[in-house]
Length: 330
Image (tube, rainbow, N blue to C red; front, side, top):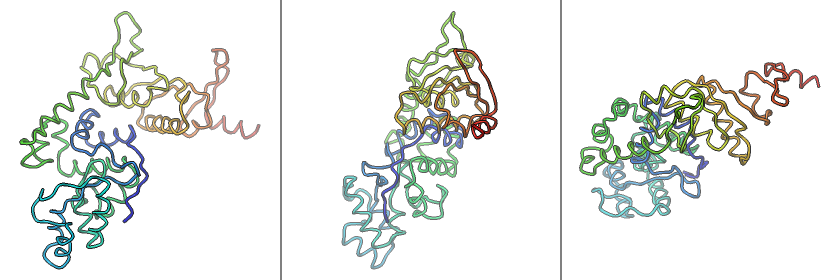
């Protein structure tokens, strides 16, 4: 099985979708991802990250000639930890050799992608087989995080996450030795880090509270107190910080309007597309966006109304459909 995928990294909008599915804020999901995942879904060659477990392969194969062959080749053994794991680059030869013996058992015996979901947990992740799960994960980290959200929902862990009951979460997710390995403490520390980084919204005394000044922008890393939640109504931001800021605002503050000035200015073409995808996903979530942009050709698919400014004055306005018809006639 070819394990080379797209290499596509996780987008903020995909992180938000997974957080919304679980009913948690982005800081909580980020904490889980930091402690429980591989850090990235692909290696430098865009191969899906994996960790093959020979003791699981031993069990998956069961008694018989296939197991005997696997044991002889060092691909299976009865007790976990009997040998050290090979480095990542050698694991692809390892899984290929295991697949040659029994594909289903091999795929069930490895953990996959960013969330490192065991193949035998494919049904909880929303798939009929480990092979189908791996095929989906090859499409990108967004698909991997979606599978992770499915798994956590199936295991009834959403409530523990919403309550930030890290002890309960760790015992269920990591097993009976979780507390021994301090997974609950690691999760607590990760959440505190993401919740307290200086992505602090400050409405300064004596200033227009429609403006929110950000000392640092990192999507979903701060939990606003009730007092702070009441301050911002409109955030005015530029291209550099818009993507993360917009996602952060939606998760932490709720429905607002965003004024965005030339978000594509100075960005590489691939980043412009990422920016536009983010704007479109924010619009679909019900957020009102007032967008100042000269690159109108790429905005047509999601804008509703157009205002033309000349020297700071409104020189005309129309629906996007009327503007298209006018352009066609010209």
